[in-house]
Every structure is written in C-alpha cells, then in structure tokens.
Length: 599
Image (cartoon, rainbow, N blue to C red; front, side, top):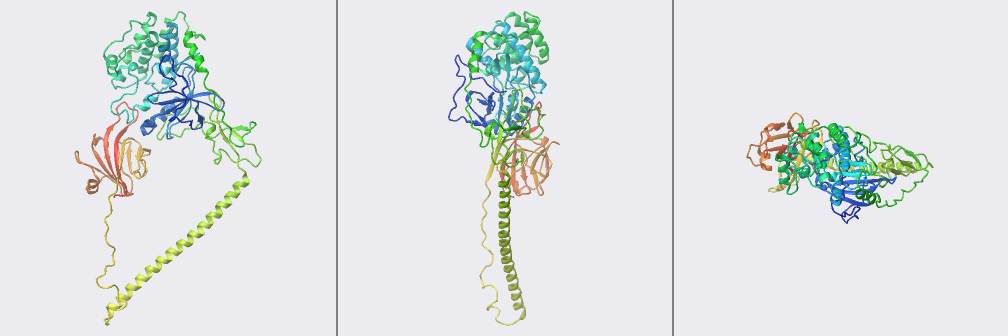
C-alpha cells in the first residue's frame, strides 16, 4: 500500500531529491528522498528512530478534501493493518484525519515489476511462476482482511530478494466514491482492469484474479494481454474481445487463460492458481531460491538497498541514552483494528519529531527522576513511533497552579465588580424612566394648568423612537459535492461544513438511516420545493409547507430542499446524486447554500 515504484524508464532516478514543494517532515518522520508520484499522491523515503527504512505516501489534497474518501481511507487503513502476509508490505503507521492524510509502510528495496520489464524485458517462466504464486498468497491475506485490491498492476508489485510484494491495496476503493470520480471517471489502470470493473459493475475478489492473469501475461511477454493505446480502446477490448496470448509460454497458457475468463464465476480460486503454478513447475513443490530473479534484475535490488542514510536528529532536551522505556498509551501502529463505524479514528503520528515538551504523555515523575523514552508495542520490524518526553519538575507545576488560581481570583473580582456597576447603572435608568412616566401621568390626570411646562414630558413634534435602518441581506456560503452518508449530519453554522457522525441528537440536518433527511433542532424545519422551482433565500423564507423530515425516495437529481434551523440559519440543499447499489455505504451527494442568521 506504499506506492514505492519510482517510475518507468530505462534508468530511473530511484532516490529523487526533495523539491521546493515537497515537505521536509510528515508528522514526526524526517523525509530523506522522494521515491515517486502517482495519481493518488507522492511517496517519500523516511526512517524510524531505530533506522528502519519506511515509505510514506502523502495523499493528494483533492482527495483529502472529500469526506467520503476520508471515511473509506480510514476503513481501508485499519483493514490493511490486519494484513500481515509474507508477500505484502505491512502498513505500520497512518493519519487519516489530518490536513493531509498519509500512511507509512515498510520500505521494499526492489524495483517494481513494471520497471524491471521495461529495463530488462520479459521474465523467465520459472520466475513468473514464483511471482504469480507469491502474488496469489498476497491476495489470499488481502481478501481475508475484507479488501479487494481493485488496482493490481505491474507497478504495484515490487520484486524483493525473497519474493514479490503487493502494495497499494485498498486505496483505489477509497478514491472510487470521491467527488473527483463521481463524473464517470473509474479508478484503476485500463490495461489491467477486469471486464466487470471496466463496465462499472460489481467488483469482487475475482476481479483481482483477472488482474493477476494480466500481470502474469505481461511479466512473461513484456506487453499487456489486451494491447496498448487509448484507454477507451483498451477497455473495449477487455470487455468484448479475447486477449492476445500468442507469445505466452506454453507452460503458462492454462494459468493465464483461466484467469482471464470474462465470467468472474469461471475464474480459478487462489488455491487453484497456486496449484496451477505447481503443476507448471518442473518440481512438485515451488521452491524459492535466493536467485529467483535474473541477475540484471537482482542488481537493481542492490542499488535500492543503498538508500540515502537518515539524517541524525538530536533528541529533545533531557533525553539520555540510559533512559527507562515504558509503553506509550494508545494503540501501536501495527495493531489489528476492526472495521470503521462512523467517524474515522485519529491515527497516531510519527516518531521523534512529534515531541511536545508541554504535554506529558504519562503522569509526571517525581523530581530528579530520569527522562523516559516512550516506546509503543513493537511491530513486525521492531519498535515504532518513539516519542520523547522531558519530565516537568513537580514544584514548578504547583507554582503554575497557584499563579493560575490567583489570576482567576483577580479576574473574578474585577469581572464581578464590573457586572455590578453595569447592572446598577441599568437599574437606575429603568427606575428613572418609570418615575418620569408616573409623574407625567399624575400631571395629566390632575387637571391643573401648565401641562406643557417643565416636567411635562417630550417636546411637541419630537420623536422618541430611533430612525429605521435597512438591514443588509446575509451573504451566501456555498459548499459543493458533499457526500452525506446515512447516519451522519451537517451543522450549518460550521465555518467548513463537513459530515459528522450521528443522526439523532438535535442536529440541524441529518441523513437518517431510516431513509430520510431530518431537522431536529427546536424550531427547525424542512420544505421540499416543487420540481422545477428555483430555490433562493426569498423562496425559502416565503414557503410555509413545513415538515421535520423529507424521505429520500421523493428526491431526484436537481430537487431542492429548504432547511431552517432553530439557531437562525437558512440552507438550500440541491441533490446531485446517490450512491450506487453495489456501494458498501449509503450516501447522497449534494450542494449546500447557507445564509447564516437569515431566519
């Protein structure tokens, strides 16, 4: 899931220097070089505090701005953390809720299959058999975690000294429902898609089997099974025509042919794929020698092993090499996690750079105690996510507490005196106004002369009411392409309106799992405008067909709903679309115009 391929070419620059627009740190990870870039983001080389190389993929901001992508991305990251196969690059750290989502995997010092074939040509049959068998084992653990890869292709298969590594599983699924792809763009590489994926139909584990057959044909021949060219032409051939397997070696023909069946049900299972590899092998058992790759490809591994050394980062003040190690609270980055329910959890940040001297990670130790290095539970490649903390003196903490209490007392006295003076002054004005009215009433009722003299009230012809002023209309704030998932709600008063978990709790606008939009704030209401009726602030103010909920089955693309909140805001919802039937989540895409304090 790391995207560690450096790009295709006869002599690719493996470790690219950081450009001006590249970050120097991601969370606490200091970046050493750029490994590559793709449609989902950029990949950088970094190191754990113990010196283990990691690949960090930083997601493009366009995807990070989409709440549905973030929800799916968090789900896929948690699922990927359960994938601990021999032929996958383990996910060791991630942040799914920060400004720029990212994830870190173990760095694999090997070229991608795409780079190896471009630079050195097709691979020998024995190598292809070991390659396919390893990829099949990787798919076995990936599918076991509930993930369909969806984008299995040569650039997502890395060739390590001890076998292949499948990466980037699940990211295509996270991107598939974003506003960037809602206009008909399909996530995936055309040359390695399955027919059902190209046609926009339901994607299953069998989809990855088809891609595995395409990767096998590519590795054995050096060209895609359905040719190259425009994406539309390739996709048409995948759906309607048969692959060109004339150059596939005979020992691989049955394996590739069965995997490339148009009908997903006719494709072999993973166990059958491995059995086919065994039967095509000269021996009954697949043995993976150290030199399973051709010498020219193995030489590329040596080059990638010589990664730029990590820069030495000085430890925080107070850290000593003899510090005691204690577990840090929270979950370790490699701990298995269950499926996401609702809002994505906050993932841990990186290692030493995340040091914060003012926020202790554990109870303050007694004075004179040595500094502690907090180390989470070790992952498969040793401890990760080190956070260094300098103990704070206990006496200093007590002194700060006394200062804070004294300041609160001073402000409390000052504030109380100010409030008393204001209330006293207001009370005197009220009493004076009342006595004036009483005196005026007494005079008018006494019948004595001189009613227009001193103390008789206002001057004739003068007005006591302020002159009326025209209140300007509130400005409209527009939020486009919101994916509102069932069980989530929107708050119109938020500066940046994003779906938040919860459907029952007095929310201003929620998508109830019962299949309706709901307005639960006290005094809140909804109005479904007529088809073809143009929504506006004036239309929402004038329409009185109030309701507290509107069922989604009454909505279609282009329909509009007025929302009036109990907090005084008015919103106009414009429906843009709904999730597909095979989508694992139910959501609606909408545009929202908000006029704050307009009710």
